[in-house]
Image (cartoon, rainbow, N blue to C red; front, side):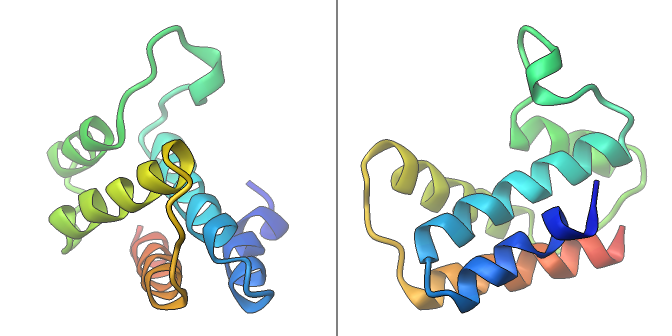
Length: 107
């Protein structure tokens, strides 16, 4: 994964594109977990693992991080933004982007 892809959520947050920042951050988290766990890319499999399954597998493999419930809350925010068009606040986007950055830095 390239540096530009890792920086995209932060760039979008700074550009005040809160919905896009939240979606990009969650996509980055899922992609990073898949790579870290040696799982194929989402588009390469018929039935990709959910974020909940990826988090469980990460825990089984000794990748420990705080905030499992928090990540599930972020997933709900992302799903609401994608499927219902619900507005994403600056505070929500900032919390997700910064939280994803912390998780990725700890991997």
